[in-house]
Structure formats: structure tokens, C-alpha cells
Amino acid sequence: MKSSASLLALVLTLAFAAPTLAQTTTAPAPGTETTPPATALGSAGISMGEEVDGIGTTYVKETHGDWQLSCVRSDIGADPCQLYQLMQDDQGNSVAEINLFNLPKGSEAAAGASIVTPLETLLTAQVTMRVDNGQAKRYPFTLCASMGCIARVGFTEAELAGFRKGNKATLIIVPAMLPDERVEITMSLKGFTAGYDAVVAANDAADKAAAEAAKAAAPKTGN
Image 1 (spheres, rainbow, N blue to C red):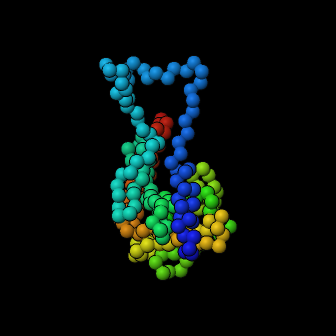
Image 2 (cartoon, helix red, strand yellow):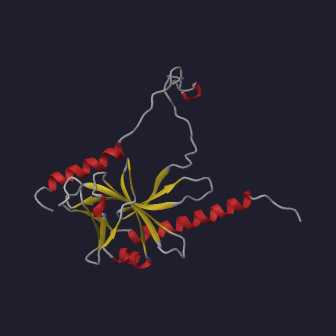
Image 3 (cartoon, helix red, strand yellow):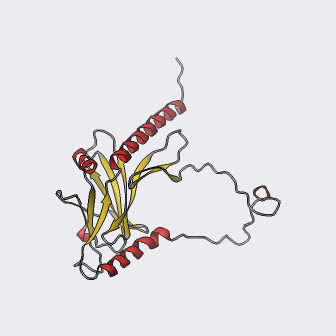
């Protein structure tokens, strides 16, 4: 990093944080009742809350080192999960994130991941990754959305083995406003092995539960 590192880190941090933290609210239509139903109010006129099933919401099930096991609530008795990590640049600023998950056996890639970087990333420079001092590999960006620019990537079994043995991976991106700069982002591999094993176990259980639910729901034919 050159002398502009502090400014660059600030630009990237603000760019990443804005779409992540922003919340959109919609004003109720004219005449729409906004007062909570009486059943949700206590004797003092305060809300006591109401139960929701939470299907489709995400939650952190476990933490493994620097990785979180992030799962989606389902109604089949087992929730699908992926590994999540908020990554930092060499100044300690959180500027990117990764969601990693296993893929079905027999696929060209053993695992897939979505890497999210700030909207101001120079897309033509792509994103480069290397584990420790190993061989670097470059990946293209797939799209940009409100959350940032996304690269959908795949990893082979050999690359996963490198994650298990390594200490950290370094991702390199280039900011669009400073095309001569390179931003190095650290992806810690602490806890990766246990976290990935937990993802595989959770998704195997979810696949089995989904298959059993589909079988139970299938119409039965007579003899």
C-alpha cells in the first residue's frame, strides 16, 4: 500500500458499510391502520410482541475460529448452512465478506462461494486470491447489487485442502477511483476445517430432510 492507504481504507469502508447498514422503510398507505392489534398490547398499552415462525430468516448457529456457521430457518427439521466471514484490509478495516458452502459430490467444484466487495471496486481488475505464499488465482466479478460487487467462485478439493492447512488467504482488489492502488484483504483460515465440516454435516442433514419431506408429500398410488 502507498501513502494513500488511510484514505483508501476509509473510502472502501464507507462504500461497504453504507449498503450493508442502510435500511429502507415504506410509509403506510393513507387510511392504513398502523396501531398494533389489541392482542399484542399489554395493560400499559405497550407491545408484548407476537410469535412468528421465522421461516426463511438467517441466524448464526455456531462460531468456529474466525468463521460463523450461518443458517436459514426451514420447516423440514434441518436447516441449510454456509460459512461466513467479514474480511479486513491490511489497516484492519472491514471491507469485504465471503459466504462459502459445499456443492454436491461429483460437481466440477467441491465448494462454492460468494465474495462481496465495495461497489467502487474496479471490475475489470477482478479479484485475486492466494493462500499464504502459494499460487495466486484470479476470479471475475459476476454482478453488482446494492450490497456490493459479487464474485461467484468455485474451489476444488485441492484448494479446500489448502484452506485447511493454511493460516490465511489474501484477496486483492483494485478501487475504481484509485486504479493504480491494490487493496489487500485478509481472509483468516482459523477454524476453517471445523467450520467447513459443520457446513457439510448441516447440508447433508438438510438434503436428507428435504428428500424425506418430498417423499411424504408425494401422492400415494394404489396397488
